[in-house]
Length: 242
Image (cartoon, rainbow, N blue to C red; front, side):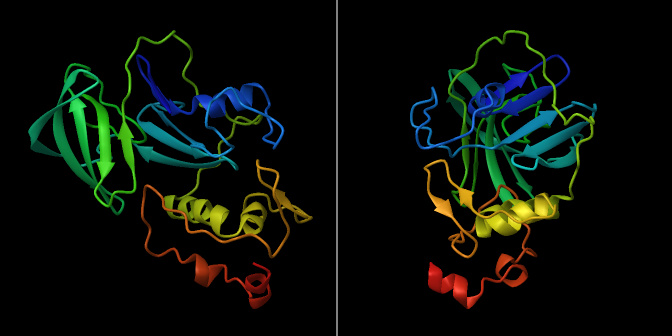
């Protein structure tokens, strides 16, 4: 991922996803990307702060897209802690916050006085260069800082210019449904006549209805009320096919 910080806005984006969109790339077993180790799996989300509207940040997950919106002001309540560290040769201070079910420890530097950071992080007097959540599932680590090329920071919308914004709980449910039942997910985000006959992974493997292996997605934000097994039960025939 790459964090671009401009004069009034910022974006946290995937260079791989950018390249795929610009080149209209469709993953396939015979196609190779100019990114070593990438096999069709990756960070399929972006975060835009203060664009297209000042004072707000937008989280966008592909496919869909599934988008949510937060007011940037006071989004995180930070507790400043004792401790010093160095990240990418920048002296850092320590802070902690609990946000939507997860507790995060971050290291930020006053040498880069931007109230920004990876993912949704903001609200500190310096740039967040390292962050991890206390259960050990997620970690953000800066590996380099360099001057940008002055490119435009802009959240792209569809031709109508409209971005559908979901409640955070519904967005989380859809992202979990994507892994639990890809066919139900496709129907939920594209409620049009006709259901998909099969779903093809970038590796070339094909799944037909009833064959999708359910997985439990672990998200950055927890919503305990979401129960995929109860809302989208898998029947006995599906279990036998797996």
